[in-house]
Image 1 (cartoon, rainbow, N blue to C red):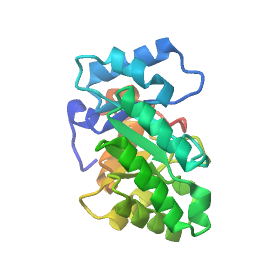
Image 2: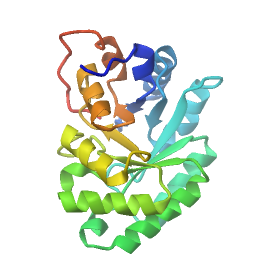
Image 3: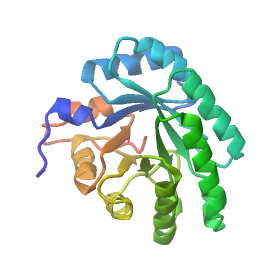
Length: 233
């Protein structure tokens, strides 16, 4: 690895993620305890768990990120806006919203833009990351999605939900970084399960990593035998 990071430095790239539908209160508590222990940037949870995560992270520097419109992005835009408002009211510091992929493929750029601007407005100055599900898009659609996101007021483009047919790739991270420029956020998520992969994503241009394997990533940082990723986000 040409990029050398300490465990503390790498942890600050990570949104420690638990989005499984069967996640319990005890699971969320464990997620938050791990985030405190390892110093992750945030925990990323479903919107119904935001208030609970805030409780477990009270008096902590760890942020709480809520997904919105997850994992399909295909619900009505007003529903996404309302979910964003509720997440903000319950204490979310950041919002990860899934773009409406079907509308993007239809060429309905203005509808997609309007929806994202509504989300950004509802987020009330909080960071919004837009998930574009790269495995479902052509290169042209990925670039067009980035152009819309840049115009929306969001702060990040994110590769994947981790719930579809593919996750983050080095090639996609490089493409997104080129499309949005050097100062915009790029979050790599989906299938990142060891330190070697996480650092490769950072070298490719990601400045945030979404993963359910944050603990394993930190533990394998200086290991020559990193475990295989299991494909979870």
